[in-house]
Image (cartoon, rainbow, N blue to C red; front, top):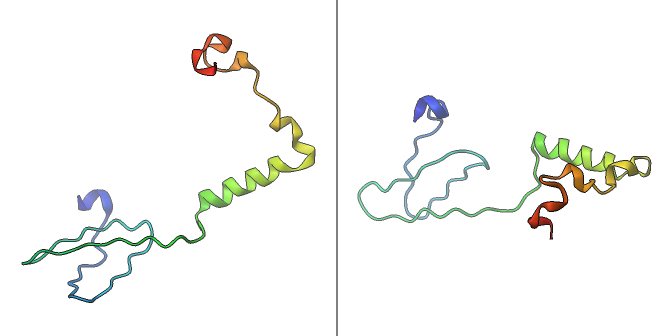
Length: 90
């Protein structure tokens, strides 16, 4: 619904042979007007330029540094759910 997604950004009619680029992450809907239609989505792998990716990469890089070896130690089984009695842990 509009109140959940914000105002409509584009209402465009495309014709046979037209291509409409919709950037990653944009909510969209395609509807045929009078005849059948094919809505084809092609995802082209690109770099993940999101704040979440930047933060995660920074954390990973920090944890890989030689002085941060304590963060790469195994978690004690006593801290896991149900400890060593958890059958999911073999």
